Length: 116
Image: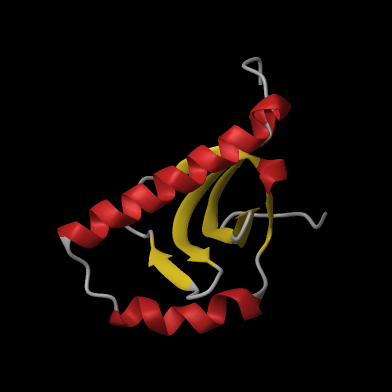
């Protein structure tokens, strides 16, 4: 895999969804990234992009991420400009992110132990 670095946009793919985030810091001693979520893209019949920019940062194993391609990100940038952010949007976004991360951990829980 290519060397990743801070400020790079990465993707965590799970089933039909893709979490796009910015690497804030690389934590080599724990083999983790500190990532700021930007968008959750849900493929499928309707295709949907959920703005996650106001949610909490994440620390996750670096091996879960891959570099995001420009062609994956660019189509969604105009949507972020138009998005009117309300408390309802915040709660919905938080729930989508929670469900996504919970699904990731359910599928990968055997790959990670507490001694990392």
